[in-house]
Image 1 (tube, one colour):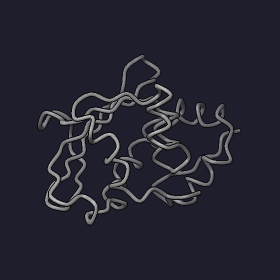
Image 2 (tube, one colour; image 1 turned 60 degrees about the vertical axis):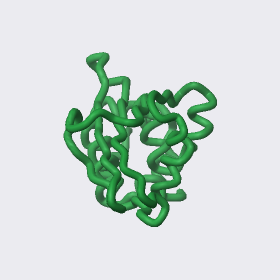
Image 3 (cartoon, one colour; image 1 turned 45 degrees about the vertical axis):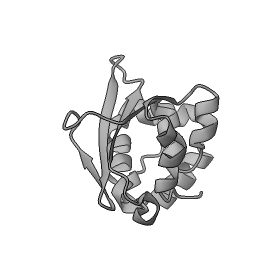
Image 4 (cartoon, helix red, strand yellow; image 1 turned 180 degrees about the vertical axis):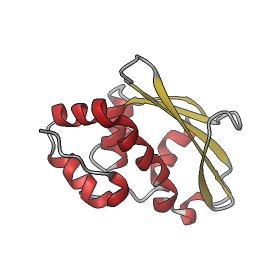
Amino acid sequence: MVMKINPAEGRAAFATWVKQAPDDDLRRLLTESRDDVLVPLVEGMPEVFRADRAGTLDIVVHWRVTGRPDGGEDVFELHIAGGRCVVRDPGTQAPQLTLWLDALDFVKMTTGNAGARMLFLRGKLRARGDLGLVNRFPALFDVPRP
């Protein structure tokens, strides 16, 4: 049975659940409730954004989360500028960095259960654009430590 937990109700609790859940349960949750999981994780990114680490950065980042049941992907846009991180509708501006990964790895990475660097080295996280941002980007967020 898949536990129905909403990441918007508590990032730390959700991160702990993700750490303990078998991948099959996570995949099932993402099949049954994909938007209920992905959207709150993305919408919560401004809450864990570290403006002190961003400096004068002014970038648009697209997350392309693959593995939708219809074979497509979900696209989320973050704009980081002026010490703020804002989630916007995609297409507002050309991204300086585009990141692709499947939903399971996205959930694990955004909950502190997988590192961006390791996902990138294993070919599970792909990037296009300013590759210098690939290493810097994860440090801009305080990801929960389950």
